[in-house]
Image 1 (cartoon, helix red, strand yellow):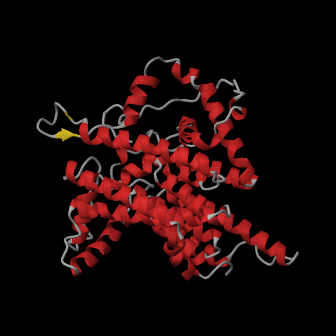
Image 2: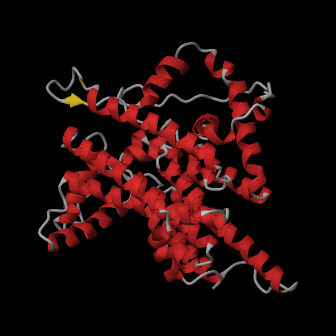
Image 3: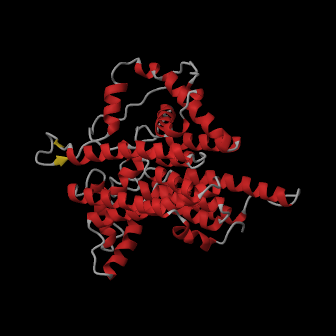
Length: 426
């Protein structure tokens, strides 16, 4: 096994810039306090997640809400936290206590991203930690730290697996990858991508030591990954597909425009780092006509930003899908040009292939699906301190505006009189 001993990973809190850790802790505490005061009851998808976790807290592991579409990893972790909290006399299964699970994951994610940036771009602790802080304040991710959703934990374990791959701790990387799949099934695609990277690493390491390579893969990671793949294949056969629960609203499709939506999304949130006069001087004018899906959820819930984007832009006129094509292509060009200096061609191909497998089958435009692809792209970008401060300011404005809308712009649906709905969320 190459790299530093695994125990070194757990010393990260001692090595990290204290300023970034303190600032993130304060931000999380503020968000958690506000959510607890303004949204005391389970909200949106929490109405499914919280009761399921509470069943686990009571030791009922056999009951399952058919509306849930993700595996029980989050509930198992929360069950572990509840056992610890009960030991000190605290009920760890209230909605507020369950939400704290994601606060811990978010703190852990800061350490993971900080260490990952250190592996990929050796630089000063201050620059590295501030860049990590900017990425954990990425608005879509930051918002869901305050609610009991699977996104923060899923992201934590995917990036932890990738960090451990880069540190050559392959057994641990495979294990983290398996855990990530228990939060979201599609994470198996990222685990496969990491396995390919391990094969490349093994070949590169072998070529440095000897011109004769005795193996084309690392057996430790391969064994763990094969175990995960076998179990996942068994799950697909047993479940009759990748979707748990409510399949009628989560059917796989062929939604190629998802790649364009993601590219635009990526360009917008990476703008503080990638935009300059040189790389926006050319626009490739090639007209494409991809089929555009309109999932029923898009226009059935006005608590999401995507509702207003779809209603006010894509539904404004039939020609919009074609008018936006040059901008999609510009964003693709910007994103590729910005990252190519820092990764290999094989890395880019693997990343694009992973995007296709994770995004194209989904007919629903949902920003949460873009969190892992965005962060995986961003950690490979060379940190630049001035632009990082600009990004922190940019993300902070979006976070504050979103939380203000969430807490203060409440309304009622005619179908649910007396039930207050919070404002738009990412």
